[in-house]
Length: 207
Ligand SMILES: [Fe+2]
Ligand SMILES: [Fe+2]
Image (cartoon, rainbow, N blue to C red; front, side, top):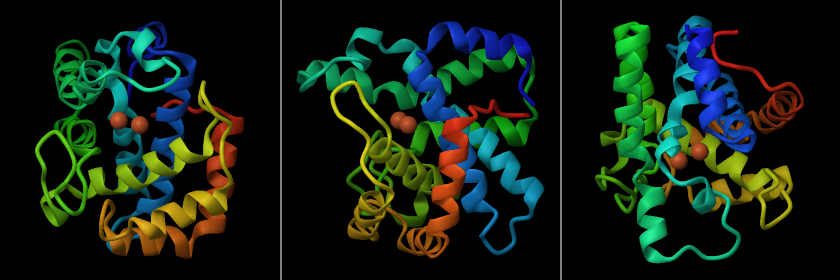
């Protein structure tokens, strides 16, 4: 689904850390989506591949800000927040070169644009609420947070699976779709195993 050219292009523009995170989130979204009623394996794979692109807009955020240790200034964090909108732009530009299938492009754009929206309406960039947020973005948000908590960052070590699950549970119905969090937690052991596999064997979408 994604050309070798695009993979090479992204490899040059995003750090290994970001690419690894995007890959793991895509893999976890596929695993979680496959648990939902009415989503078959093929559709789950498409959702996972599309979710890979959720942070692609970070191409336009200076790397020194992305890798900065310690607190960001308000200008810096505003710039980081722009990655959702930049993501839509990057995907539109990429589409001119690689011609994504329309459904795939729409899904990838939804994941990029809306994955920082919150269930309670307190997210960004639009402040959408509950099911106004597309399903794929609600799935991405959960897996994104899980991976952010369990991954090693420049400024701290990764935390445990149990701590990440506790965080998801705590913010269910506030930040996250509570029904999707329940499904994630119900399959917690499998999510943990798949996340660990994705960490051990970085996988590109379409493989
Ligand atoms: Fe993001
Ligand atoms: Fe992310």
